[in-house]
Image (tube, rainbow, N blue to C red; front, side, top):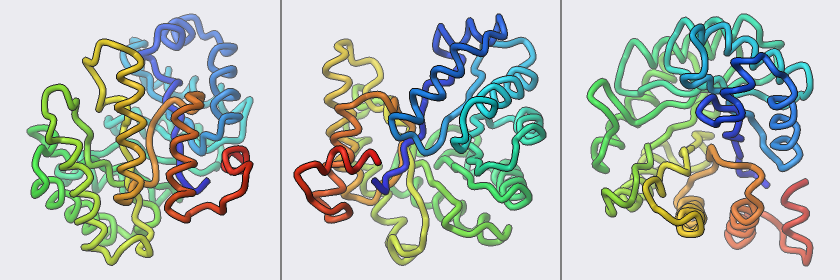
Amino acid sequence: MDFIIVGERINGMFKNVKKAIKEKDPSVIEELAKKQTQAGAKYLDINVGTAAEDPADAMKWLIQTVQNCIDTPIAIDTQKAPILEAALSVVDGRPILLNSARGGVDSEIETFVKLAVEHNGSIVALTMDASGPATSIEARVGIGGQIIEKAMGGGLDLSKVFIDPVVLPAKYGQEQPRYVLESIKQILEFVGGPDSGLHFIVGLSNLSQMAKEKEIRELINRTFVVMAIAAGLDAAILDANDDAMVDAIITAEMVLNKQIYTDSFLKAGRM
């Protein structure tokens, strides 16, 4: 499977992770790291959230705990430069993804690009500015162009850039999923297509926020990710242990001729 799954579960917003951070209990974090890696996550997203009075120290502890048990690359999830720099001070040299800068805030995107170049990492950059996320196709594409310009100007290859066109809840803006798909297509056209190496990523669960039923949330997310892969999406922050979601991603890649069909293509896609 070429699609890049970024495992979302090591996040202080989850009750078990929040408790583990407060008690400095590595067992919960180790189990989540191992399970997500076994499920095919290519990065493990690490986000302290609001779980600690000293988020920089908590971030360092989370990263060190993960590094002690697994070799999987890490996504450092914070917009705050001091926390980001604290995290980078303990990274052991494995590939890293700096998640996530607001692409329309020059100082922020420049800092992320600089740190990515210094640490041989990649960045996630949101189509967002100081006033919030872009909500139109035009605004998303415009900020996408700024991200590309800042990355190239700072010496970061496009293969190390993940643009997040910011998925917003469909319940409060049913046009938004279509806007995201069209934005991906237009930005890809601007850089000359997939051969540019540019990546697109979304925080998938945002789309179905506020939907009351779990089955409906899952259906919305699965349907969208298949459509987005056809538009050019090649990465997402999601639950790597959601087998139905991973099956949908693998099948979409097979249908698009990105994976060879065999009767065991689902199994092969996880290898």
